[in-house]
Length: 240
Image (spheres, one colour):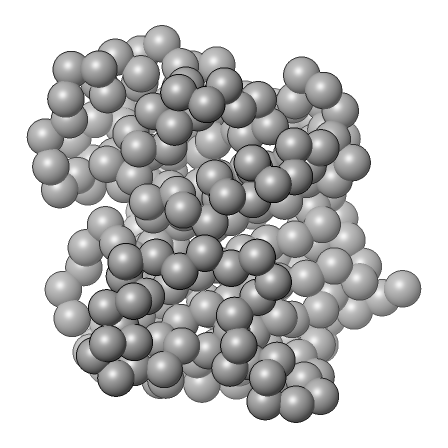
């Protein structure tokens, strides 16, 4: 399966926020207005080099909690969540230019002020975030890297799960969704090996039905039409 911007969470050598963002992983040429947003709006929303211990300080109005979505793609889930819960702070991570362009346009159009952005790979960001600073981490439909020689490039690994666990508050959740059975199994095996993460479903509904408030994207609709069955894993960070 070829890599496309519809897939997220791609592991790659980080460039850091100070690197050149243009020219990295784009599918369509940006329109003039979209390019302008990278110069005018993104600098106001990008995470600073030095992060505060309380991530709520990143937002104009102190949020009741802060969440992260890794690889938001077209931004459907992140935008829906930001609209539905304006008192929550959201950090969106997306290395693809076109996905980031859509997000910036929506933020400007709707005047959303509870979003902050990271236009690069998520692993370096997870290392920088303060411990126990997030109430949830989402990873939806990451690139499956289906060929055996490619699987080491999958975002889910023992290292990244340990990083996700570190930034989650006790009792909070890591949510994962995929339509690729092999990647779901891959993820569950690595979750089982991470002692601080717990997946303990009571019934099949907990992994076969979408999360509450779920937004079905065009990609997911196509996957279901093609006969692939999505799985939705809600994993809890151990602790009170």
